[in-house]
Image (cartoon, rainbow, N blue to C red; front, side):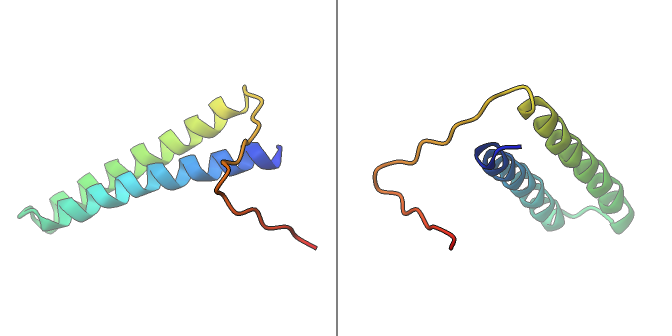
Length: 78
């Protein structure tokens, strides 16, 4: 996998993970009991992780080339 594709995969995974973490945080604020929370949490995590896997599988079908914007800092490894 190219570095550019790996970078996009990582960004996609982080975005999807943020959505289900934010959803779980909102769910914690609700007045549901602990057992309901556990069941819903399990479903949210399963769904989020399934979508991350689907995204990674779909990404394999593409050639990805990263084009940095003009104001972006690029660091080089020695």
